[in-house]
Image (cartoon, rainbow, N blue to C red):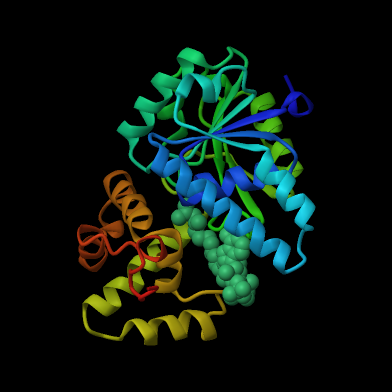
Length: 287
Ligand code: CAA
């Protein structure tokens, strides 16, 4: 199978990344099945896609007709078998926890066609380790989108130890079909390339505030206006989800060592469910 055979894309998880990836796939013309564990989660994801497509149409970035057609191509589902039977490509975007992801693959491989490709949107976890719990390690790779997927150009395509070249080529071609720029990541190391750079930046910003050396606003104005990033470090943490950055750091800390110790300020936000835009409050208030 190559990219021209891919017609149906299943996205597992309808959270921030899942619904964003489903939207991008639908805009590219794929039939999309978006699956989450209950009607509420999958319904929220669907509503977010509708909102985002509406925004793009409102700003004339796409026509209203294209927005409606893309939404029509998305089928929200809870049943795993329905979501993966007969699919060509599964993109998994469930929470950033090794055990959760492994459980999901055990369910999915039972019903997915033998030649379907599995791609994980993990932000940091080992592609090799995830691939080894499936029956198709050679047809498994990382396909890492950035938040918000509909606006961000880059997709990291990560090779695990067992990934076949044909799998990487297929996934890169699909990313291009989605209008993205794939960058191949040859080494399956924690955080890959982008998060290895970006997440320690968020962590250091948090340590500066935690130690009382500067305020959130001072740090953000520096990263935004002096370093030239499109968002301040704390704005970015709120955008991607404080919990997402925190879980990436926990994993990097565990595998790469003490330099990646997560700042307690991030842990405190996660404990209090102040996760950023998605919960209405993080380092900033969105109510
Ligand atoms: N769909 C449609 N519209 C959206 C949207 C979406 N998903 N998200 C935001 N918008 C809209 C907003 O509602 C707002 O609309 P209004 O103007 O009508 O209010 C508009 O887009 C915001 O546009 P702005 O003019 O304020 O901002 P911008 O267009 O210049 O850029 C941005 C927005 C692209 C998000 C930019 O700020 C940016 O690039 N930020 C950095 C994002 C980034 O680095 N992401 C990667 C994070 S790391 C990651 O994701 C990896 C991981 O694994 C943790």
